[in-house]
Image (cartoon, rainbow, N blue to C red; front, top):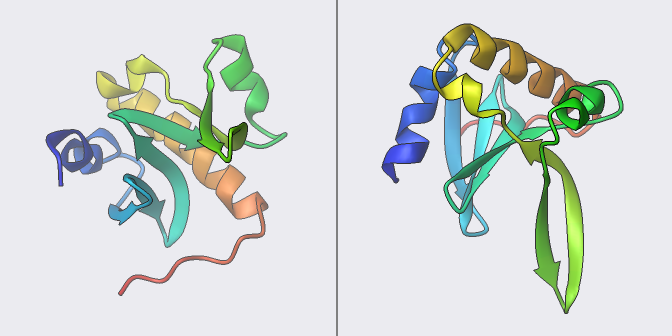
Length: 113
């Protein structure tokens, strides 16, 4: 595990317990067994949907994208605002928004091993 990923429980300490799990060359970030964030290339992305995307749009935060078979695919995760790394209250607010988007997604929770 790298130091950036290891710092996330402290960043989100006011949200509650989180865990991380290695996946596809990056990391999934979970709260209450729901993936609410991901880490790719040392960048944290938070889950978005129609209920919270305006918050990300307002700050011009870019979507997580990957390339497969020559096509660029955007996922429902946006770059986290840098303020969350300095302000635990902001981290909890943005983490809660992302967690609520994960709940609304209908994707079943990923149970801990």
